[in-house]
Image (cartoon, rainbow, N blue to C red; front, side):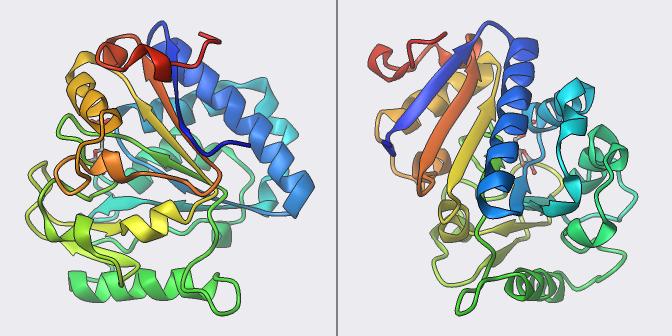
Length: 256
Ligand SMILES: O=C1O[C@H](COP(=O)(O)O)[C@@H](O)[C@H](O)[C@H]1O
């Protein structure tokens, strides 16, 4: 198995969401067969939520024993629990509320009306990660981590030229001045994301093309954070045609 980054190009956003949803369901079945449980880290953003909606719409959804799946988030907007901006709320509405997942398997970041001090909220999430970590580790092994990508190349809430993307010790960082609203956010750090077995990046639209092209051309991850995303076993960019215009031909997997 190669750990090279692969780019899978799809005709449009709908085909992309359906394809990633189908792969996610198949891979989750394999992971449950092999390991007996799965840890999945979700993303917010346009494609991240579109994929969850497609999973919810798939008949294969009900072939999975969801009681063995744990859901985490790569990042969260630090707003009230009920806010429509929360990645958690969007993911629940798109998928999680429709699955028989035990509530204790869902691990959202704290909301601002639950823990108003954002530093404390970061510590609480770090403790939650630690509580589910294997012996001697600080966080669970994520089997699949989904990441959206912003037009500026941000992943999770790790933004270009901000301290968060450089963090190597902590598992969770606080972002107080996100260039994308809302300004206050919490995020897993790059070492935690990259410890995932599989990183699946999902992005569509021409506004993402430049960031993707730069990342694959070897840009610095402090300037283009997506350039630094690399899973332990697999790193796959699931993209639509519009996002792929600057991808070198030799990196595009032949199946699409
Ligand atoms: O704010 C966020 O944005 C990114 C990407 O969002 P998109 O709508 O441009 O696709 C997302 O990955 C991140 O989780 C989210 O908090």
